[in-house]
Picture 1 (cartoon, rainbow, N blue to C red):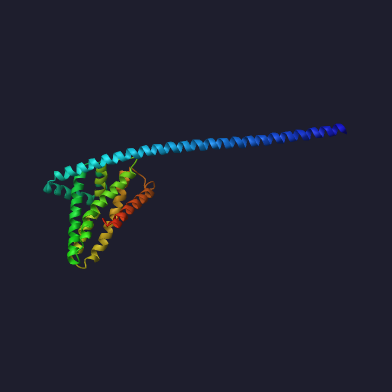
Picture 2: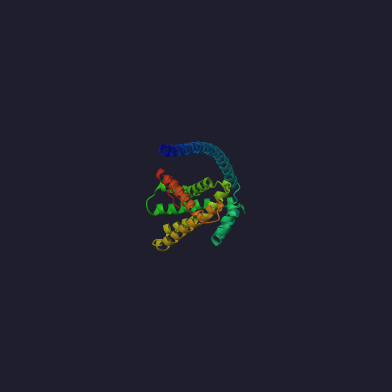
Length: 273
């Protein structure tokens, strides 16, 4: 009997020892797990720091690029205006407007690829856009009461429209970087419906009750402008699939409209997409 008791005791002790071993294994595994997690956390934080440093470097590079691109674009605009031949450039701009009207998507692709000296024509079109808008607002002021501030805003609106959209698209374009001149040319090409809207505004200011016809025309032109802006942004950013770009375009539109709203609050612009 005593031997049997001893055997049972020894088995119980062995089980206790085994359970202790298991617990120590579990504890060891848990401790090792914590060490691994800490190591992962440390490595992740190091990666984050490296990415932040890299992002900082990229921002510095982008800032320098933006400065150089802005200076180069300014010089090109200055040279274009200096060498303006009104008769010749007006004919070229007229032909380009007809081309955009008949096949806008091909014209946008030409602007993106910087074919056919689109930038020079784009400058002429912006000047024409400003002149037509000024005429429409001036006539409206004569019919109602003169508003000098509104007249100045009308002069600036085409410039703000082109510069804001071009700037936002340029900043969003990381992978398929295009010169600022190409971006501006593309935006002006896509903004051609806005030029036609200015012409419609002149008719509105001259002819009474014509808004019955011009209101739906203006709405159609505004929608056409947004569609062409979408296509232009897609071409500039080098995106093929719509599903990969739609959400990004919504963010781009939000940023553009936010800047437009700020300009309106400051009192130096009154525009929207």
